[in-house]
Length: 73
Ligand SMILES: [Zn+2]
Image (tube, rainbow, N blue to C red; front, side):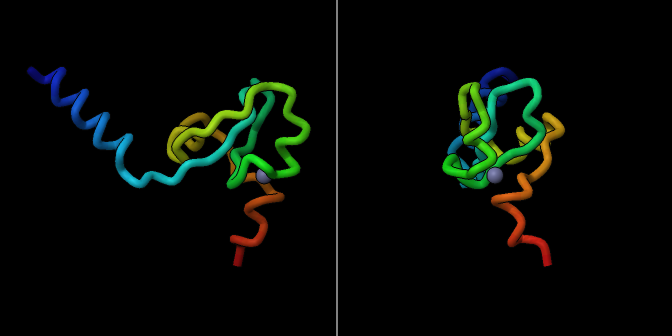
């Protein structure tokens, strides 16, 4: 029964409006990107994946300096 709840909450989280980011699926990629057309991803010779922001943070990734530079105040 508890497994059903895990699945339901997982689906809920997937459906929730979680911010998505783009990462290069390389072991050397250290950043996540706001857009898949970022210059930083041009250098990526692996697959570019779209993942939730919190997953990127969980993987220890930092915001890309190119596409997030305007966020700093
Ligand atoms: Zn970027």
